[in-house]
Amino acid sequence: MSQLPAALGDVKALTFDVFGTVVDWRSSVIREGEALGARLGLDVDWAAFADAWRGGYAPAMDRVRQGELPWTRLDDLHRMTLDRLLGDLSIDEAFTEKDKTHLNGVWHRLTPWPDSVAGLTRLRQHFVLATLSNGNMSLLVNMAKHASLPWDCVLSAELAGHYKRDAEVYRMAARLLDQPPERILMVAAHQDDLQAAHREGYRTAFVRRPLEHGPDPTPNHYVDPCFDLVADDFHDLADQLSC
Amino acid sequence: MSQLPAALGDVKALTFDVFGTVVDWRSSVIREGEALGARLGLDVDWAAFADAWRGGYAPAMDRVRQGELPWTRLDDLHRMTLDRLLGDLSIDEAFTEKDKTHLNGVWHRLTPWPDSVAGLTRLRQHFVLATLSNGNMSLLVNMAKHASLPWDCVLSAELAGHYKRDAEVYRMAARLLDQPPERILMVAAHQDDLQAAHREGYRTAFVRRPLEHGPDPTPNHYVDPCFDLVADDFHDLADQLSC
Image (tube, rainbow over the protein chains, first blue to last red):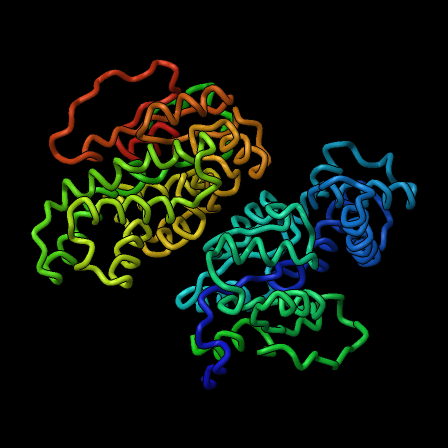
């Protein structure tokens, strides 16, 4: 057990990014895609498909952020990107509407990283645990039920009508948790999410998830020194927080 | 096990009123009041105090509903009523600010009815379970942690900026759960809450909590025939829902 850093002594709640930080979206999408592709007799590179689908995420949110689209839930942004990808690959006609709806729901059925449930269970003994994700509420609730994620509270960008990294999302969470931001620790595998939380006064913990983008990612060794903690997984985070 | 009523075959989520339906607010307030009164050497009828405090709830919400107050969280409405009661009883000066803050927090520490946790645990195997309470989010999150209430999702009037029985609250829950209202079963011990949910298209389950207002309430045997289910407690509810 490490000594708890002094700046974290007053932390009451932990807010978690989810996609990539808590769950392994890439492997889950590949696995379901391969099963569906086999059933439909399709020859698709599902790893490339997963990367392209996830790659549509930031541009789609930017369309909402810039007012080109009204507020649109992540489920619907995922579906827009899915439809485009199936068209681009000229495999659209192999899918019934039911197949598409089911495949789009894969984001509700993502598998946690091996340490996630056990680590969260330790952390929950000491802190309020909330999601703070761009996933819509029903997506996050279904995912938690499917993967046994022990949240005290599901919070979503949907409640703010803004996507991270807009400041409104972090302010909404502090208001609903009834805590000043310096008593909340944002936990994420993405530095821009933590930097935005830091700007709002949150404490921040960077968790390394080197396999998020697959076994051969471009390594990035730079870690912003503004973060309060850097952890290798949720057990390491629980150790550092004396849980 | 009863046969599941046909109208309930498509229900996916259960939304719960909390105060009185899931937790026994009256006994909890009396118990904490008596302990605090003994420590401060006060002679107070804590049962009457609990009833008067709770009695301030509807009028305070009506002030918000009618625009006399801006949106105000239940914690703050509770505190306004508490301050008035302590003044009316001329015991205000016996309390430090810390005592008042702690006493006001009793609503975060309410004790569940004996069947609540076990009944919810059975129901959760089959349905998404969400609160739908006038309590603010942080109150409900703290209560769930204190009392081990196994919610999948905490939803509050605070998210709608309206108090039950305003229609906006039920619409907010259906939107966030991404279900049409006829797939949601509102569970409450208060018929006006269920009637308002029914008007929005929800299914409804009335749970009898004859001890909510103490051992000597005025009995009310009338039950609105519009409700889909009537249950004696959460085990009976789980039986009737084939859980």
